[in-house]
Image (cartoon, rainbow, N blue to C red; front, side):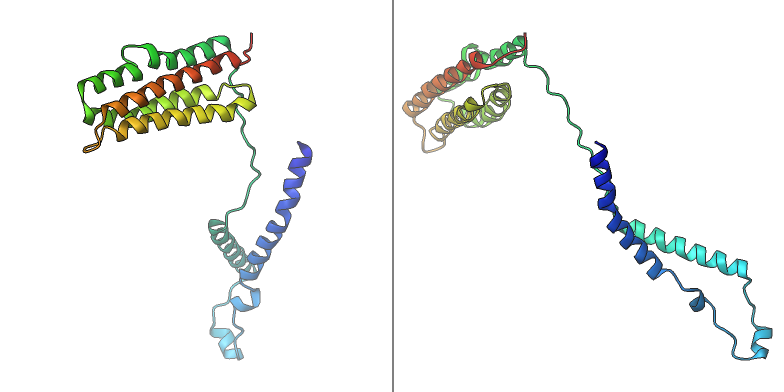
Length: 212
C-alpha cells in the first residue's frame, strides 16, 4: 500500500513541476508592472507605489493567475478502487433464485402458461408485446441473475448460450405472431423449445457450490 502511494506521488511530481512553471511564466514580472519616469519632473508628479504595495500587488497577481490555471486544469488525484464484498452464495439464495425461474415454467401466471393461453386464444398482437417484455424481465433479469451464482467457470459460457436460446424461442414466437405472418403451428413449436430450454437451465442449480 505504501509503495503504491509513493509511486502515485512520484508520478504527480512532473505534473506539479510543469504547473509551477506555467504559474511563474504567467505571473507578471516586477519590472513590467511599473514604468520608470523619464525625468525628474515626472518622478515628482507621478504617484509611486511603496515597496509594500508592490509586494502586495505581485502576490495578488500571482494568486489570481494560479486560481485561473487551477480552475481550468484538472489535477489528477490518486484513485482508490472500492471493491464491495460479494454476497456469500448460500443454499437459500440459490434456491430462491432458481425457484423464481421454475415459477415461470410451472405457474399459471408464468411465461409458459401465459403464452400458451395467448396462442390458444389467437391473441397475436398481445403475443408480440408480451414476448418483447418477457425477454427483458425474464431472460435478462431472472436468468441473468442466476448465471451470476454459478461457481463452475466452465458452465458460465454454456449458461449464456442457454439464455440466448430462450431469446431465440421468444423471437420465434414473436415473428410468427406478426401481421401477415401469423402461424399457430410455428408458435407452438417455439413454445415447446422454450419449455425445454428453461428446464435445461434449471439443471444448473445442482452444479453450484454453496456456503454452508
